[in-house]
Length: 291
Length: 324
Image 1 (cartoon, rainbow over the protein chains, first blue to last red):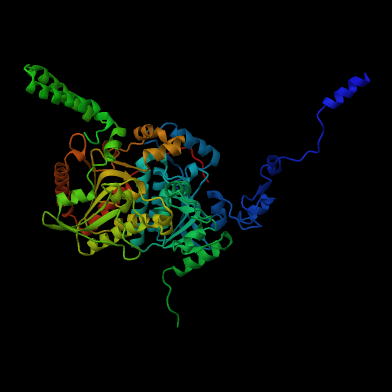
Image 2 (image 1 turned 180 degrees about the vertical axis):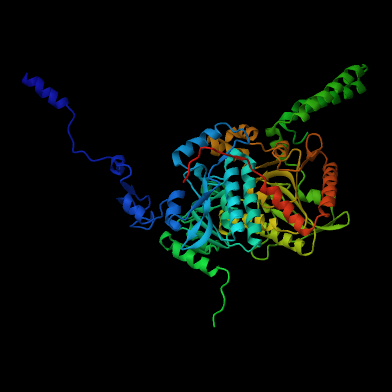
């Protein structure tokens, strides 16, 4: 019996001190804590949100959805949404398209990848469009193009500035050439608005690429970006494959664009309201020379 | 036959067979005339069957045919005294886009178009017809010049897309395309756009904000190449054929979607079979549309362009919706 016990013991798996796996280490209870993807610091979500979702340690700008953007940017309760019930059709009868849109509607609790409306920033009236990258990667199909166009027309009608926060992977594949034509539609509308003296401010957030960067996102009287935002026309992988050369680390970041003359400025979220207010006040009609 | 495409192989085979038989009857002492006649009837029917039912993927192949006529081919056949202008006045000259002034049946016009090469050497020089930002800025410079001197603008679209490269991004590919869309919207002269080969996404659209929009019968116009779409949607670029079918990229598709005004008929089997004949077909459409557009005032031309793009897109409204 003693022998038996002995053998059993040797066969038994040795007990080692346990070290939590990499996965377990990163496993923070959902919602309470957030880990910064840039500096890996773990912080209270509440604190992060209070800081406009900017990392308290490294300044990384976490993605904001449309709702958070409205709350953080506009005067309290000043926002009036327009065209909130506009939804996609399936013009090319693309398989599974509407199912995917519906899934994202449930997930994000918005009806499409852009939210538009009017409101005020420090009492300056504006029309605002906010793209939301959590809905179909912020891709632009007929509805996104139409809502943005209507928002531009609304700004024209109200004679107030048009501000857009962009965030998009580009054109929506499932609407094919109709998505492509939304680039032209939004651009002709901006041209008309601009000719009527309208002020256009584009604020590019992470990521702004493809057909969106090659249309309204680049057409502001002022083009701004959030720090670190990815902005570009062709994707990094596509370029690396086509030129067979590794691209610099900062390629297509807001900082890269600023260096190459594509942006007026990079504005961090904390400074945004002040800087935009300043700009809006400079553009207020009727500024007369005082003696 | 050089550059025959897969879908037309039965036609080519039958045609060769008939030629062989004819050759044979010349030397041998047999009368095959009734057989030949039968075969010729069959060829006629086969040609009709095949060329009247070209599949989207086959059209993609025709649009990419190495011998397909390019912008400069059509310029040579349609205009007199073409004078090419180079350079964007700030960075360089992009040979993937050509542009200049010419006369169309006596009328001074500005002509701009993407330009592919005819052989490898020229293709390298012209970057396979894929422009950099300076190409679009050259095009815009020429359009502004046309606007100033009140000359109609004719754009030939033929590109796989704007070039995806490091230098292109550094110099602002997105901004260059966006700026063209914006400024073309405000041109006070008639703008006519014709897709003659591949209309690849934003790189094509940057010459495509016109009052009239035509496509050659076997050209394509899409948001992305079928290979690109397949890679994004199904993570497999070999499904390009499937993507070509579902993305509605052919001239008849775009006509049905109301994006183009008309389809310019092509020479049977593709424009590469007869450049002169194809130019003549384009000539008819150019003449007709110029005549119509020259009747319009500056304001009407701008409004016409606005309305054409303003109405593109499909959407509906929900009764039960999520409010923010």
